[in-house]
Image 1 (cartoon, rainbow, N blue to C red):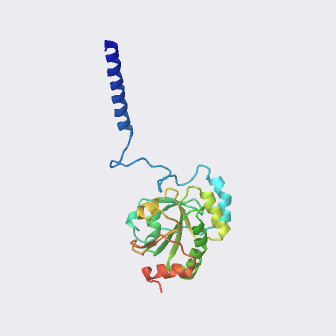
Image 2: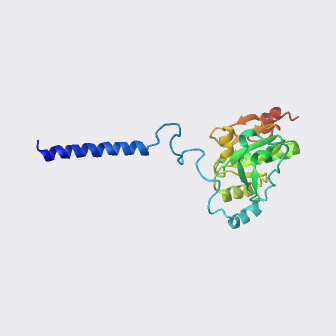
Image 3: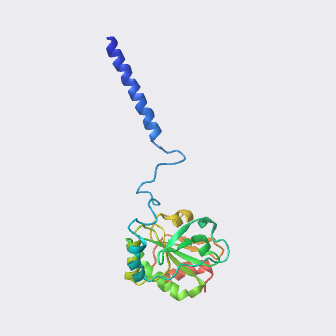
Length: 218
């Protein structure tokens, strides 16, 4: 074998080794940090779209006419939700979620505008809120970045429950809710989780049967 051929082989080996090293550096693998988030990751995304500006949301907000989001209650609220600040879909104000839920039994209903079972369930949640009155707060959490679509869906259904815009699904992640929608989380007044219910409800009676015993509601 000639000297030039040997040098060509050596050069090829070096190139392959460098390529392998570069691939290992760029590939995150399955180490502690895990793979990069992708669209298949249930918590991937943004809280809202760039298109959902204050001006663009003004009309849909007026049509939806949602109830105000809760004001801070007594205490620090659920420890797992501390530090999460979301937008109130009804008026765009910022809500410190833990503080807003502090000191009051709460039913969190996690949904998205494109979810068929969610659409069927939301009126039942509104009916349950009317039935139980101020003893329990029902707060819906929209888990998609398209806030306009959420407001239009609520307006279409005539559901005026207070709603948080949570495109990143921060609440679901913090409470370790399974990646299904709709899902309901029942929180006691002291902030502890009484129930996580990854299922849909058809009527207020079904909701009351599942929720009330955990909250001591008669």
